[in-house]
Length: 277
Image 1: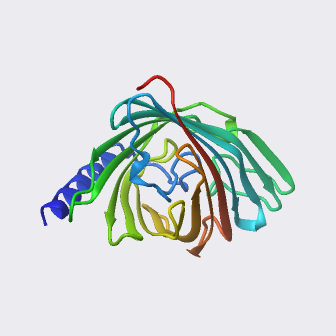
Image 2 (image 1 turned 135 degrees about the vertical axis):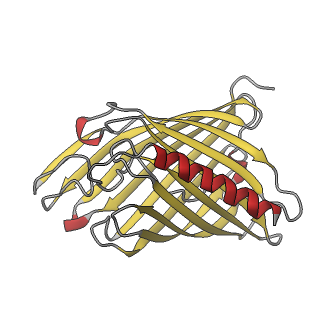
């Protein structure tokens, strides 16, 4: 009960803070590279001093009008500053191939039919904090913070103002082979004035010592727009203590004026110690 009250109080504070930055103007859908849904996050993501994690991510989204949105690739480098505190930088090369005219509901600028728009995506900076480890009925907690830098990247993909999104991730072990990750998030994307909220429920199953399969139900919500809910399945394979590969594919549960069709991701992760013991 105390844990539930803590999580609820924290989330309400984040929501209030996000709404405090709202202004009165027309809202458009959060941009990819602005707000991302929480997805698969393990609590071991809390790095120690000197640890470095590099993520090389290839993903694809199907937009309305059967247009394709690619990140080829997305790069994410995270460095442990002290134990349980890490800083990261995220960017990538983005390409949209449009087979139909696309409005600002999907990207920051209009793209005409049969046109390609590509370039550097918005640059994001992160500061992530491992709050506490799991102990008996108490879940582990990991707090992610991402800041989306204005006027960075190609003009079609830029955000107008500083954006922020915070996610509190929790993890609870059910058995030797099953555990749950779940999260709540809130923020704003740097283009639109209204607060954006997210949730994520992620059951994981350890098939073997180095293979995990998972499902993921997530959603993102904003004022004046219908909710976007998605489901995906995937697997994570660890080849050793330093290198792993994640692959997932999913679909939306409903998609009115939002991203449509399937989406997928392939992620390569490499960990090493740069300057710690």
